[in-house]
Image (cartoon, rainbow, N blue to C red):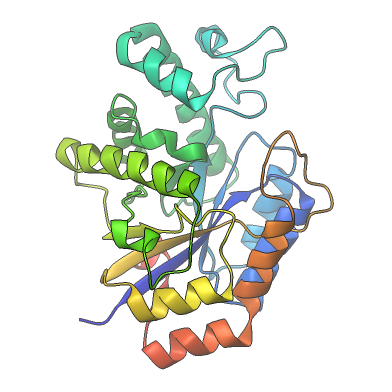
Length: 282
């Protein structure tokens, strides 16, 4: 069976530099898809860019950790600090979501608002994913599935990265990346037991290599990936305008942009006969 790859850029709308890079990576490179963060400063600009790029698949990058909420409902206040910004780390939110009905309701309300925002901007989201993969937390995943069904969004990112990506002949990754991929892989397995209706891919590539994706990584994707349908997660951007408190990926974003637009990368995919698609084309 012919292989299909989705190459997605997370963080669309984070800032002007990320928006510019996403547009360039699609127009001049191999990027096929992106996910927009509704509550970030450059989200409205991202919408306008997306409308000028009809071949770019656009999903929603759900976010409960950065900035202020979209929802004005007072029930969301339990997720916020004294400055009305999201208060919790991924670890703490995951623990609170297990036992707290009030927390889960607030999460549902805010995520509903973020998805509705995209529709209000005349976008038709191809899929849902999330900042720091929190949608894969087992108590939260059913909420995201319910919302996908309600809004008739056909796909949710399945963040299952096979173990072999952390081993040779794949490019080397750090211990932190291996541990992160292992934890998310465990949650992804649980998600698959919870609901398979919205899972459209066989693997997510780039979890262990977050912060290390370059041309050699894309070469490895074309040579060693065994999944028939997979998503590659990327974070292109220009360093100017990035807030160091919002993201640990700074110069690396420019490396990824260069790799996405590289003639070598394009040739690797062409020679491998891999079809580049977005979620709306699955």
